[in-house]
Length: 595
Image 1 (cartoon, rainbow, N blue to C red):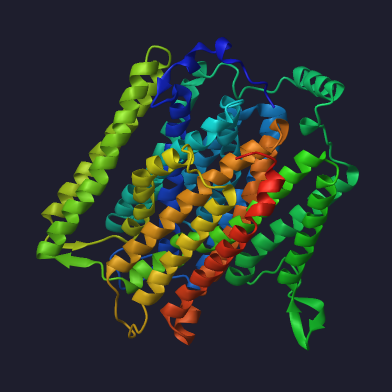
Image 2: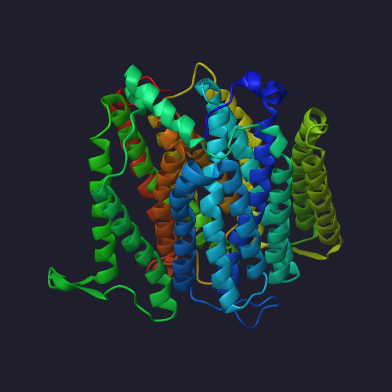
């Protein structure tokens, strides 16, 4: 990993914006435009695939929810697996800043293919997005980790502010891409995502004078010297632990099986083509055992052997802290399995089972609230841009000008959208509008949580995880209650979905941004990008499970009811939240003083 440059060698980082280095806000906006594109496309995918081919004004492809869920789960899972390889490449070869540029360019091409709307362009575009994300995602978070080297007390707050950038981009991406796609045409939504991905890449590239050597190409000679010095001084926390031949074999085997499983799921459903055995060569209690599931279990066992064997080779303190990371990653799976229903089953629920049509006073009230929801956050983010402009315009004028162009475009589309809706006789709320609530609530509450984590009342990591999981489960409990006794063809009030997103968001703020922060604090510096990749592996498993379970909404609803479907996602996260709270004493010991 590139060596950290002392503050004295990088005068720019003495300047502050909202109490943090101005460079954090360059990364804030870079991530914002990447998330604008990512979430702008993602909120459309399942809706586009499952929308009826005929009988609607804006037809989709008419896929079943099972097939759409399988494709979405695989896409979302791969998005969090490629960062493992991308993190290694950034660590060893390109450095973090070049990895961000490479990933951004590939993702821009992916969005361009998505806008074409053919079957080949859909799959190829999704593939490019997966590859590009592999370079981008672990690298930009690693730049923050390097920037805050030696300041662990500031990391939680920094990652929470960075997470606001994530959700500001998600908010406007889902709102504007979703609105254009549902009201004008799918290509408009997919195309807008690509445009802002390109502009976000350009503003980051033009800001490179700002960062000095932070995130630069690794200095291998200096890194080797640091390893020798640490071992000579007996510094065990950063002891070099190279991959053995057996480690590499296990990595290849587990990765190959996992990749084949992810690809096989949608391929076998959509094209009836199996890359894995349909059944295993043995029975389980007299019933044939699923071949794909059996292979997935084999891959998971091989991966666990790899993790255990590597952990045993570290010094005790490092080993204990890495075990803590593994435990947190385990609970992360349950969180994302439930939370990511927002991109699959909740999209279909909002489209088919929520009353979204408003007239008269109801329409006026909604449009007024929607205007405030849109304009107020945009004003706040524009103000942050203004503060950054004042601090950095002389040093990086090109980057600031690109950001100004981006915000001018967003303001233009927002004002056009609001004028169009206020002028309409009937307001039909878009399906994608409900998805923005998650991002809006994060923008509203992120500052509160950031201050909480920096106060004397900061709870332990296990309690943060417990709060997050239980709040998430409570949100699904509200949906189960709201949809109970729902007659066939009837629709529920939108208030239940709004409240669910509120509690899901509060849970997310307790858990998700802090996960990144704890990885950066518990993991030795030279392993940081790789371990971020490993963290994303847990999220990948959760996302794949989310797609698979989300695809069952039609089947479970027909066999039981909607309430039963949502109760599944009530009990699982609540149970996980109680368990992680019980593990609090153990986790404190394993973390060895890290808070």
